[in-house]
Amino acid sequence: MENTNEKLISLINNLVEINNDRITGYETAAKETDDSSLKGLFVAMSTESHAFKSELAGEVILLGGKPTEGTRNSGKMYRVWMDIKAALTGKDRKAIINSCEFGEDAALQAYDDVLKSENMIPARIRDIIGRQKQKLQLSHNKIKALRDMVKA
Image (cartoon, rainbow, N blue to C red; front, side, top):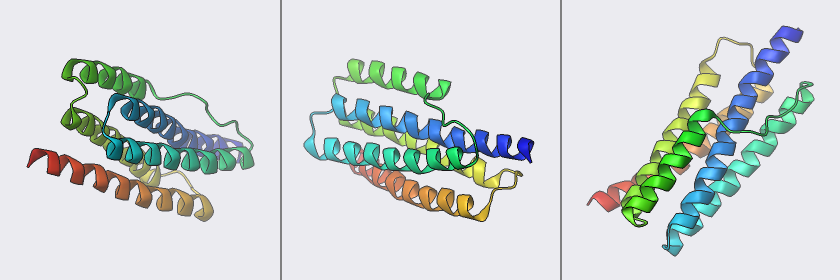
């Protein structure tokens, strides 16, 4: 049982990390744009990830684990890339939206990986992850729609 809990804690902590990445990424994006509508959207998405992180961290604690505080290495690289790109493009709306879509793709992939894993995930936790993934998909779709409008 201990080994199963450790694997489950690790899976959930992976989602905590991707939400930490998302929080920092959207906080960065909000700083990089002067567009008030984008700023509002990015703040809302950061707030969404704070809620997701909190819910997942609670599950880690219930399982006897410690929620991770960090981010993924790929997330750190993504934020550095986003900072550099924003600096080079002069806060270009299209570049910022493309960077955000990249982050949303990574978040959705992380959730898919957990849901498709062969580890036993209790129904309660699977429901939480599934519900969060649905909300992430809606956020992704908003970013994608913005990207498509910028392309037009």
